[in-house]
Each structure stands twice: as structure tokens, then as C-alpha cells.
Amino acid sequence: MLRLSKDETKKMSREDLENEIINYTYSQMLIFETLEHFGILRGNGHHMAQEMAEKAKEIFNNHYKNK
Image (cartoon, rainbow, N blue to C red; front, side, top):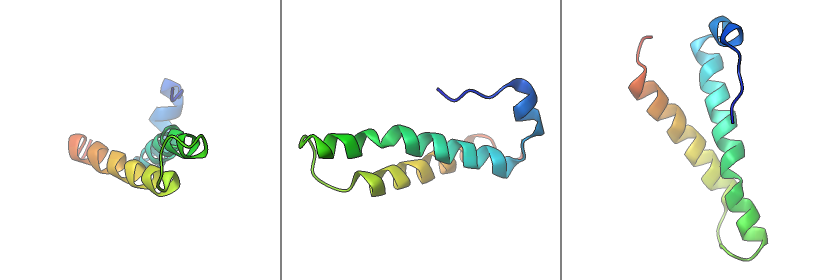
């Protein structure tokens, strides 16, 4: 879970928030890489994690425009 204090978030720019969302989402999506190593999935978990992180940023920006 992403743990930021209220004071930390108040000091963050929009770009800082986007980067936090990207980094958090990417780290959580690396489970796909683990599943590859276990032989459960085949593909590229790293690239999937990158795509999911960018999608999370896009969704964030669509829902919280100019706030």
C-alpha cells in the first residue's frame, strides 16, 4: 500500500503525484514477472508492468483534471 502522509502529499506537485502513481503501480505489477519465473505465465512481465503503470497515470489524469 502506498503510504504518504497528508503533509507529504500537500507538498507534492502534480508531476510528483504522477511519478508516485507510476512507481507504485509498476512495483505492484511486477507480480507478473514472478509468475513468469515460476513458469506459470509466458511473456514479458517487465513490459506489462510498464504499460500498466502508464495506464494508471492516464486514468489518474482523466479522473482528476486540473485539481
